[in-house]
Length: 589
Image 1 (cartoon, rainbow, N blue to C red):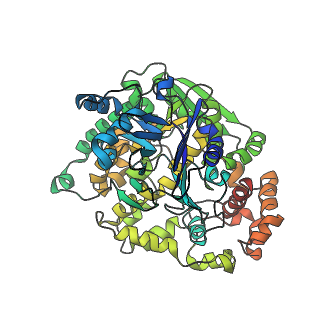
Image 2: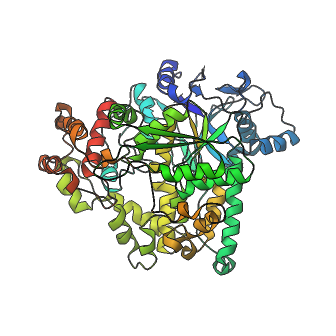
Image 3: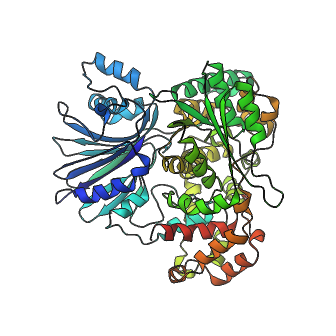
């Protein structure tokens, strides 16, 4: 797990100083080592977090002189021992014992098809010495980020958006289409957009091949299909339960591959509790688990310790309960926002940020439960879609924060664009491979929304403290299995029916049948006092007024009664617009 960056120059030598500036910005992602390689038109930078092969032999940028290849790589390949054995059988010789060198040899052996063989999370750049060609790639679910910026005569890439900005020469003007996504799709800005016109994201499951003259092409190496056989449709629910249990056990086992201890972020919900239970069943001893809680506000509890404690006690983990007073929360909000590659409105962000700060004192790697709701239909908007005759309308009604008309009442005229978010959802729902509305929504959420909300949130907040997070529910074989399950078993029992069937094999009923939980942060949900002052100061500042994103009368209504302006997903409209301005100011944009 690391931070990667680089420049591919087309008409001049690559600029090592620009790559050095990006690498310096990425330092929190890789506090253990750093490296830079510059040759002709390509310069690569790397910040290392030592997880697998802790020796200097595995440092990056890594070059194999025999093969004429160099690489920078962020992530973890869980099946690298098996791939290494296969490559050794082909005659390849290894000088290190980690997964980075396996990536180099795998590319040489199998070319652009090699990502299809990888189990794991990854973003990489591979340079061919002889041809000057560079191949950029990103894993199936975009668990590892890769941002791109075209500058004068060059293409730059980095693990974070702020790293690209730090190197200079990037167009930081706001993109109206991306702003429409942010304001409409609950702050989700899908690839290739970002809020900045000059920065784009490589989509998940995608390779970009960049030639020395600047020409480039993209190819998608994996797609998720919801097509089913007759056998799939007729398979009993209890059979799906056993198949999911087996696949989840495999996914959890895979993510224990490390040369350092691995812990678990234990919220006390079904998903993270299942990870703990399955590890315990497999004989994992001395497992460290971590939970966080905040002060209550307006009668709403700020923690779910009763559930995480129950699971920790049941399975005998070394449990760490972390409580954050409101004064500490307010103090750490600016640092949380600074850790965001893009503005993310979920209250979970500060929870993950502060939790990661404490967890990083004990372990370097954790497993986390993100992805289960999108893969196994755990959200409340899926059941109504089962009988929908207007899937896009019904999805937008529940998930979208505003329709086009409402957006026109909130954004200043200069920032209004067409109805890009709705058109985007319509295109995705219409693509082949998912015919039922529930399947269409699950595919969109698990391959797009998930990438730029929960997954990005976990990556940004954990890596701010040099902590690697692994997400077993996004094991691609598990996800492919889940996609074959008909909607009915997944929607049963209020959602995640099949997963709850699995959980009943190993977890206490109190954990399974509880109301759906999350990292509750009441102080941000009910903006008042110093939190309201912070947001109001940002939105009324000189720089915000010059930016002119929002209508003045809209902001005045939000300031007067924050609790009265809540999105369909129960988020604060004031926090959404305030966070955007706070993020822009924090990053000097």
